[in-house]
Length: 193
Image (tube, rainbow, N blue to C red; front, side, top):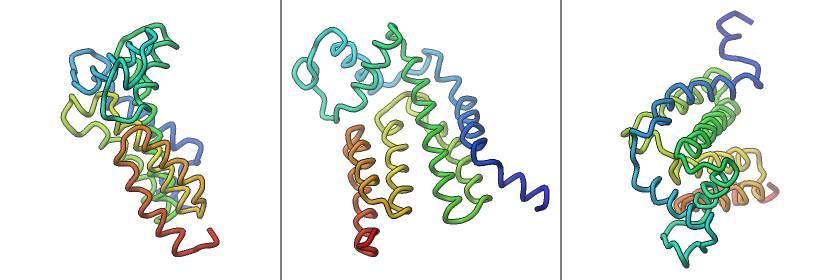
């Protein structure tokens, strides 16, 4: 192998760490409370209601599925803090997982170079929208690693695991259910999967 080829063929165990490091660097500004997002503030408020014994969809109402509300609630209870930097750190991990799954998917289909480029671009792209959206821990951030996991599992002919991942993603945001379309295609194309 040439040295250039070795760069793109990093050891598999190292790539997720590199991608997470990129995510952390581009999301560090979000740890300051200068960034405000209405959705994030409302999710934190609902999580606070849950922490004080309230019931979701009874004492705090939203049209979104319950997944993110409970993630915030558990993070707040685990750390004993209501600071938004806590879910934002969890969001960095979710962005890192998304980038890693992009790398896994692209590497399997297109090779090492495409996989690494895809993972790096996914890491960078996680912070390229408006600061209020890019730096916050929103529904889509926690939905995407599950959607990517569903795609990776479907690509590996594991429709049950893929369906479970889509179900979990749909608990974060309803739009994740659209991922059932490519899964149905994979199963239809190869019924033995």
